[in-house]
Every structure is written in structure tokens, then in C-alpha cells.
Amino acid sequence: MSELSVNHLLGIKYLNKQDIQLIFETADHFKEVINRPIKKVPSLRDITIANLFFENSTRTKLSFELAEKRLSADVINFSAAQSSVKKGETLIDTVNNILSMKVDMVVMRHPNPGAGVFLSKHVNASIINAGDGAHEHPTQALLDSYSIRERFGEVKGKNVVIVGDILHSRVALSNIFALQLQGANVMVCGPKTLIPKYIDKLGVKVETNLRKALNWCDVANMLRVQNERMDVSYFPSTREYTQQFGVDKTLLNSLDKEITIMHPGPINRGVEITSDVADSKQAIILDQVQNGVAIRMAVIYLLASKIKQ
Amino acid sequence: MSQKVLLNAKEVNIILHRLACQLIENHKDFTNTVLIGIQPRGKFLANRLITLLKEDYKIKNLQSGQLDITFYRDDFRRSDKPLEANATEINCVVEGKKVVFIDDVLYTGRSIRAALTAIQSFGRPNEIELLTLIDRRFSRHLPIQPDYRGRQVDAINKEKVKVNWVENEGEDAVYLINS
Image (cartoon, rainbow over all chains, first blue to last red; front, side, top):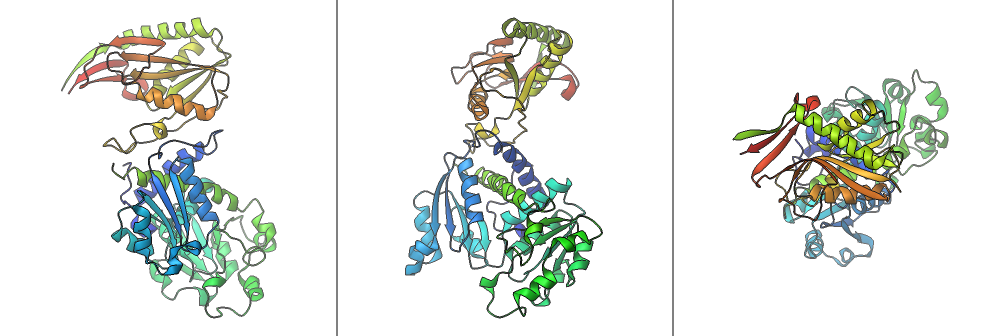
């Protein structure tokens, strides 16, 4: 098995265990590549990739762009803010116009859930979902699992709690699928208002007491409160949220064991985690960012190898 | 499918000793030399030569590594089978060194072309040489020739040369396979 079972990366939901294994093994090789004096390989020199960002992003966009350039692909960037989308062009028209310039692969972030799936059915290019609304963010989940694997040797059997705004989080959903596929136990923790009603149907534990959750877990993945997606108030105040669901050094030190802290970024320091936690040895936040480039190189490389000439 | 033995264990052993001696002739004490096995099959030959040089010829401080060329190949998306990557391990400096590429079979020369590009990611060697156990002459696609060769073989294109190693296949032997 050295080929992905899919032609697009639309979500973790569409992958199987072997796919994730293959992506991780390929990422191992790319991690070695990006630590060389010359961090570039020529594999994708005849591939052109369009990064279409219909929603703001810094880290993910930079990470994808760097991964593409490290593989020697040609890259074009597109941000909805400065485009014809504002003039009323439809998604399919926008993408088909770009594809007619001979583009082989599309990396897309879009505010609407399912935008990637929709596009994959209507255009002739390999699609990578870089986040679609509150649905999925598969490369983030892959790099999170990869970072856990790097820290612990394997993901299987580990207890992982996802803390915070589960309701608006695509990172949470993709992480749940990815972790379960690899045999980890998953818990979500946050204010009741920010936990989707039927999430236990996915086979995850639900906890509203942060201390209990942290005592149970090996890894805590701290999510940001997505104020920009909130139309109504989900908790009384940021200060109260921090008191109940913020992690600080005192809380970490009072636990029975040392746990690992992850964060997909951007961090709101002093809200979900304090600065001393974010910068401590227990946090692997910057490792996650480095692994992100290797994981994205692996995904792009493996999908590109399925594009026939 | 028929197969013919090109080299048996005893012949492979003699050739390995000769290749080791030829390397010593050109590289003296190997202080400025790095031996690089080309993944996946070249590493077996490289490891055997390194063991020989260390144990039988008492060469100390040998520097070596393994180079994977998958991401540098020119048949990405062109071959029917997906390309599978292997580990690269180069834990020494190649800048300014004499590098010796070691591979089991030299056929079209395309792997070596890829290796020449790949090694540049680690620095600029002073010289690069090529050692192969089997040299399939007359089937080259590129102007690449070995500096050290175990045995020259005239094989037609549909024939395959297979090198077996004790540590991997349980025997030292080279076969010409006609399928």
C-alpha cells in the first residue's frame, strides 16, 4: 500500500487508517528534507497549485504555500478580499476560470461547510480542504495526530481531550475522526453551550469540569473561542470563561501527572491558556507548526502522484 | 520465467574484496571521503563494503550515509507504480568531501542522475565517484559511467538483473532473470 484511497483530501471522514499511516510515513521523510541545508525537492516541478482562501488565514496559508514551494510546485494565491467574488462571481465560475489557466490542484478554505466536496464534484482538479466553515480541517487534524505520535511514539490508546469552543470548531471534528481512526480515546470539554448536542453519538466522552478532564487525559488540545462565528452570547464573559476553562501553570502543576498541551493557533494568550503554559516545555505548539509543513508536503505529494499525465 | 546465476556467493565475495581494495587505492585512509549507499538496494552493498573496510582492512573513521532519491526521480507521475520513499541518513558533512555513490545495479543511469541532484541538498562535494556491483552496459539512457565496477553484464532490456544479499534474501548471489 503506497497510494492514498482518495483523489481529494476533503475531510478525515473520507480517509482510512492506512491512508493516515501512509501520510505519516511520507511526512517523516519530508520532515528530514525540511531540516536539510537545502530544504527543497524537485518532485512537483510540473504541477501548479492554486491556494484559494475565501476566508482569512495566516498560518495555514503560509504553511501550505511553503509546503508547495518546498516540493517545487508553481503556486498562485488568491484571497477573496481582493477578488471578483465580491463582484458576484459563483464559486464554480471562479475556480473554473483559475483552472483554465492549467492548474492541477486546488487548496481551498471557505466559510461554507461542504464547499470542498461540492467543488470536487464539479471541477477537474485535485482538491485539498484547508478548512470549510465549522465542518473539517483535515490537515490540522493530521498534524495534531502526527505531533502526538512524535511525542508518544503512537496515537493508539492515548487519552486526548479537546477543550473549548467545540461547536464552531472544524479542528475539533477533524481531530475526533482522526484520533478515533487511530484508536485514541477522545473527550470534549467546554461550556455546555459550546458543545454540540449530539456529539456523544460520535463516541466521544463529554465533560464540563476542566480539572476532571485534564486528570483523565495525556494530551489536551486547547481551542480558541471563535468570537467571529458567534452570533449570540454563549457564555457570560471572557473572564468567566477563563476562570472555568482556561489552563494556567498552577492548574497544570496541581494535576496527578504531566500532560502535553497542544493548540492549533492562533492563541488568545490569557484566555484559553496563559503565557507561561504556552511557552512551557509541556506545550508542543511550535512543533505542531513545524510538523504542519511536513504533513502538508506529504498530502500534496501523495495526491499529486495520483494526477495522471 | 527462467533465471541464470551470474555470480555465486564466492564470486560476490571476491568482487567485494577487490572493490574494497580499489577504494583504498584511491582514498587512502578515507579521512576526506564519504561513502553513500543509494536507497533502497544500494545500502546493502554499501554496508557490506563498510564492514569489509573496517574489519578486514582496518580502516578507521569511515564516514557513510544513505541517500533516498525518490523525490528527485524523473518518473514521478509517469510510472505505473506509485513511488515509495525510503529514509535518508546523512549525518556527516559532504561539503568539500569526496563522495562515493554505491549502488547494486547501474542500468539506465537515471537513479544516479537523481542522486547527483539529491546530494546537492546537503552541500557541494569536491568530487563524486560511482561504484556499482553490476554494470549493465549498452542500456544507458544518460552519459553516466561507473568508476568502480564489480562485473559488466550484457543484458537485453526485457531481462532483469537481481542482486540478492544474505541479510535480506538469505544468500549472496546475482541472477539474470528472463521474464
